[in-house]
Image (tube, rainbow, N blue to C red; front, side, top):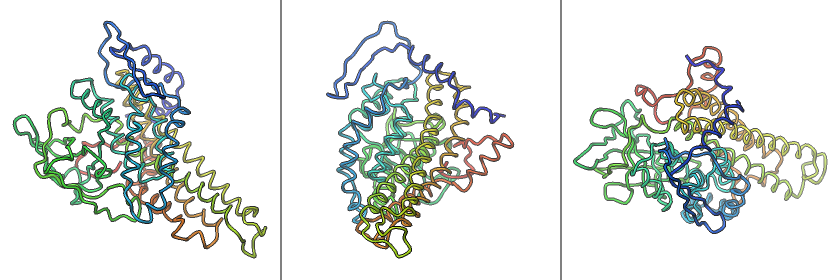
Length: 459
């Protein structure tokens, strides 16, 4: 039984320092350094370097430099956000801007020609992107999660090919949830080996990012009944994607249906689900929390703009100028506190994942598994904090504004619709109970994909 004291691992500075020393002292066979200005790389060869356990390396990026590089692109994306929301215009061009800027490589170590960001930095950037457009940010969830999965994998020619695909700007989308409301216990999608390849047949929903993708991440059952995840090329006759997402929020994320009929997959693109990154569920959830944090930031931004532009006040007001009314200013101040709490919670959760990754990279399975529990606790606590914060902000921002704030032209309602949709992905109703059971009774909080009798993709 794992005791709740393992939560303290998240804030153990001695362990953090030790982990960084372990990672930074590991020699590697080939070292690449990315120049942020001209995107060139230099190769430095080391003699007699040992084989690494994974592709993970100690983060080397500076957050201010990452923001300096990507914020101008986020600002361009923000310019058309309201119009795209009103007209349900898919942001193909905006996603391509990010691909062209190698946003996908933010987590890749510099050794592999990436930006070398930590998970905390990565999710902070995703929140900034979500402030600009939460639909665009959510499109990246599956792609970034699969990159993290390959970084955790053992080095191999097949995984080397995947890193090259990332550098070639090939994009991953997809979804695991069955279109027939099945659970993992009743999953109908099959992954069957035939000679030197596999055939995938089934139907999925919530296929986020699929219309922007080159590859689709699909889960199904092998012939022995075990769960298998398969990366299927979208560009083949056996794959059909349908834009039938009916949700009132996140409407341009391509989260509709994907069907597979004898779709081909090849060696190196098929993995036992049990071997996927140990903090996979943590990652997927934290990506949603990053998008929600960005929405909270956008609510504050738009609330300030709307209050400044408000021309008249109600008779009950304390000042005829709305922007000088203390009570209306208090509303904006309270929303700023929600932004503060959501950002702090996101960073705490993401840092917990960084610690899991560090232990995995060092080959310390015992420490990794302890930190996976601490990470589950941190992500659940962050989920409760962030969802409460963003939904409160999305509702109460109208208290500082007049009736004109409900205009479809400014579309302030999009913040609540998008936040409510994202907050409904995973079962927040259960999280406080699970946390309490863990803290009081030491009941492990970590969900396990191998428990096939219950549940679907939610974590």
